[in-house]
Image (tube, rainbow, N blue to C red; front, top):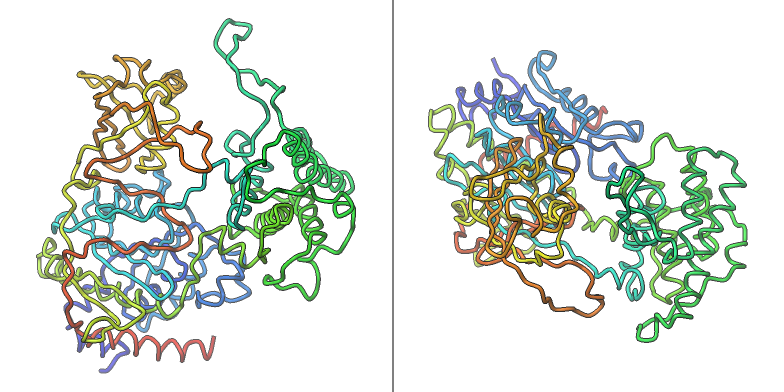
Length: 626
């Protein structure tokens, strides 16, 4: 008797179809690529899928994440995506299990190595490097194949990572480093709209997050002191505080206890006056801008006092509208009032948070205005710059998701044949290009999957060389900037000396409080002889089954580039190996620099045609009645 999957059965065989229907699949991410993947999985007969995603549905998602509708806005993506896609399963859908997990894949209490081991394979549909690195390391530790993918506009890539098959992991290839702007440029000498947007994001953190983490924090210098018990502590020297910090502090206190709109509005106007008038006048008087390319002019107090309708509350409002100075003032104050009644405020800027986007747009445009920087940005364009977003193309997402499922078929076939370690021969590295490539004119370029990078510290346990000033860096700074942010350790344990004595640890059963005393210490003053030139620090993370040795080199003098004031603590991760760095988080997936392994090859199109044509046909019929 014929059934809806007869085409797939004829293409791949009854045994593989049975394997597909019985396999357990983990999908991480249910956004642009994730929606396409879930549709493909459902229409291809996969019956046991679990989905992890942290995000909720925003209006901006509806134009390309087709599983979602306007009535779903505000709901968790994974819940809605699982519910809708399960209805697409062509055979016996009621007994299938599509399980959503609304949470962060970096949460080690829920999503750890034992959890990942239960799956036949993992599919990545992520838009940020931190989560990608986390999933990569979980799969390496659990011995589960990972199908990695990403898109950048019209470009896309798909690859398979599997240590047992001798394939490169996600972190074997150096990723594009995030564009970093010097603090002095952001704070004092902006020349581009992006500088003002970065400044506005720091202002958001100053208003709602941890003050000390904002580069705009000028609450005074923290100086060492003794408390009543004679122990070391810190106090704040207010003599160096800026003109705006007092008004920021007052507002932060008000949002915890005050709901009066007039009081909050007055507090907002005071912040604007201090930020864009008093502080600018103070800096001009000090001669701070003598060598700057753009000299600021203080914002008129008449502009701050003018009352207009908040632009985002106008009936004709569009996110592509560019606001006037008066509009920006009204929007900024409206955001501060709204924040006081918000159920929860994000401590850090999030491009998908409407309040954060409107506040950052208003503040950035006001700063651009006083520095005569053009063009001013709409909320829509600010979101693209603030989130480092390259517009997503729905067609690219669909193609990449189809290719991922083809790779999943190949992995399951290898497992079915008892050859799970043969993925180097079964799977391919595939590029989706915008312009036809070579004489063949293919839009999809297939090549052999590369072997592991021998210097990859994640899958090859390589030693990392790190150069910095051991007489200025503290252990806390090393943990924050290098070990966690740069190398991606989640719960590190640090061991120093020939006997491997622990100087710091985190994680389950760790005595974190005992080792807190080492955090403010300069590296060369740490126990076990400290970190000196030539010292080796062993770093372990049991939550990721990861271990690496860091070999230190001391360097005191560093080149000071234009726009820098020479106060930042610099470092170099180098030698032959440059590790993965945090990249642009708005969906950009950097092309792997592995051209030595590339070979052009014609793709087998039988199953591709099945996925792209049969799925689209069924999908169109489904949407017609949705």
